[in-house]
Image 1 (cartoon, one colour):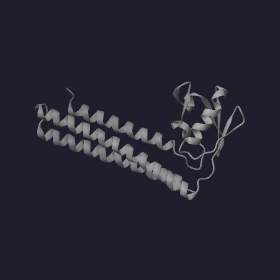
Image 2: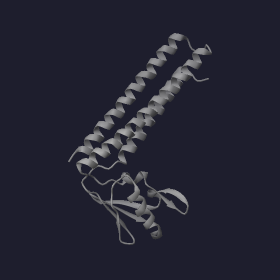
Image 3: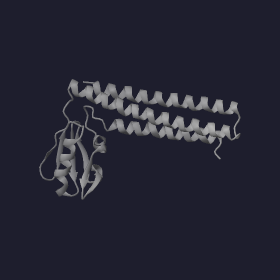
Image 4: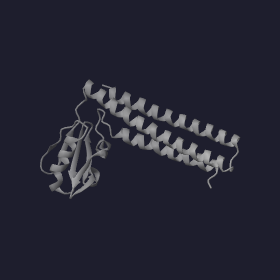
Length: 187
């Protein structure tokens, strides 16, 4: 059976991965600058399969406010264009038959506020993931205590450690969120 230290180490690893996942999700939210990571959440129906865009095309950033997408298979260009238009990015693609250009307009005030809401939702999902890890860890600690493998004092100390970890990781997500909001609202 797992020891208290193993449970805490596992909780740290899982909470760290929740923060990394949240950071990655934040990178997919558009600010004023062009970034290939914006298109990470876009999937395209390709031969009956939902396929990530980055597996179907080369994505480049030729200038600060422009993305270009060059599909490996030119016949998929229409479905790529459609997927981008239907996404929550608010971008209008234009294609010349071989290449899709995605100009990045400076988001207006209303669009910025929408993007902040999207980022807050992603941040909240990250915090929920961290709290779920805490719940699992607490549950396992209580099981160890019930089986008599850990004393009450050790269980309480371990629960305090897990709670502190949870608070620290939640604070990290709040910091990421604050920076991303500032980046979005910057004119």
